[in-house]
Image (tube, rainbow, N blue to C red; front, side, top):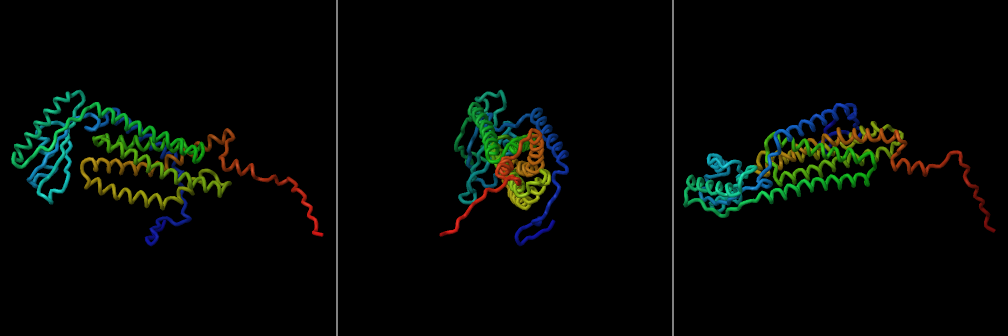
Length: 345
């Protein structure tokens, strides 16, 4: 391995590493992570946010700039209203007024009128702490749980459509060896990311669905690049074994994989620590998803492609490109036709 900062090159052009040497171990690790994630999701349950369970939302403006998001969150927790999200909006330095959105989450089985009274109690607590002359209630909104159920259904339906669309694209763009690995790779990434967020007790909101859809797009992009290089290597080196083809193809894409993942993870790491609120949850979900997606493109999708290639070859199947070239190949024993040319008179 070499580092070349002029062209931002990490691995030399002829670099080859035996990635598939440990494919049995890596597949076992992936299965274990998926099983653990499913157990965490099943036992602990997904921590749905107000977007899905409903609740109440109040917008307040405070003319005292000493009150920030953390201080309001502390006051809200002391009021005992349950799970709450506090988000600051606007720039308090311009006019000396800070604006905040406080969202109280409705618990399962809780009456919607009860959550409305909790919002009133919270504002009274804030008014007593800040001062009636320094705080203003801009708006108060009740979020119905029925709307949340509809959003949940749409979110899962969007994930299902993305999986089906990717399955159809891979089947048409490549061949039968690649589709199962690509789709199982995506399911693997989403389950592990969801299990990780559930273990950390992070809220699952509409921004989380956006993060999972982004993870799906990022992961399939990484996988398709590896797949495309596998197909190119197979065309240029038809006598090479499938394991050597996969190792060479992954090695040739390592520069792109490392640089792309590193820049993405760096940006998400900053957003995780400095974003706060929904941005923090989105960035953390994406951070885990990119890590797992980069791993799965190499150690899940590629080994499954080898496995599918071995199974299909037992039934006499050959890739479309190889079969097409075999049809076009001439028989060495075939006598070429005799062409008689006459001299011009």
